[in-house]
Image (cartoon, one colour):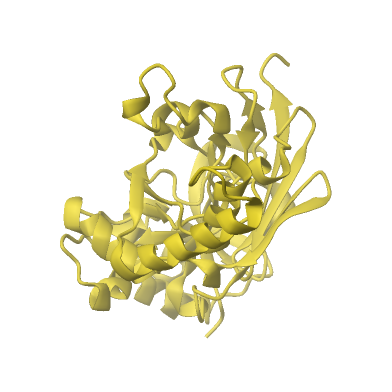
Length: 329
């Protein structure tokens, strides 16, 4: 069977009209037009979200079409505007502090730990703490507003509220079935596929300094417009052999900042789904951002600035590209 993916697009000649697109070998066509061509009523006039709401049927129909369709008259990528791959999900969940080296580096960089420890002692303390967390702890999850979502190639407008906008390349899980209290051993049955996100964060707005007992403020630090580029594609799970062993790489203005694999996750996808669904009902099209590897701006003391070009890629899922633009431009 041909590998295919999905996305949401507009023609550059008709930017106001959006359509769910089927993608094969970088060629794209409207799912609805294919439905008409092959007489598949279940795919007519569907968004990517509505396809996910009946994913088992939708996937089988797409699978039956893709081997028959000729891509010769399909659009090329340069004819299209890429919208968020799912336009738009209803819920976004983010699993924080979920990559071992990332958390250890942040601990050392921020010098958070027992007093009197040198950097080597602090690193060893953080590593032991992460091992203990995996053995006895649970994922740490927060939500992010849907209004933060943008397309994979849209400019990132740097808001005036922060002086430390940071990057966090992440593998995103796309949910394909409604679920509540899902067991970890059943969790992958609820996954439709995967995409790429960048959990942009205002580092200086995370801690609440006015009342420290409040701890972290995820709304102001992660919820601003454009702070979650999503896409370019939704790749069905059947085409991703092992989501826990995907290479991830992000560059900022040509310099490699993140270069890891998803194997460094502390809590795997199954554990995240089980944990989230213990407290919230998952819906088709929901996004779970599974955490970001080491190499954020905090580690380098280098944050996003006007003119920067961010390029993020995850093996088999495509590439994102954002130009950073000052708010006042």
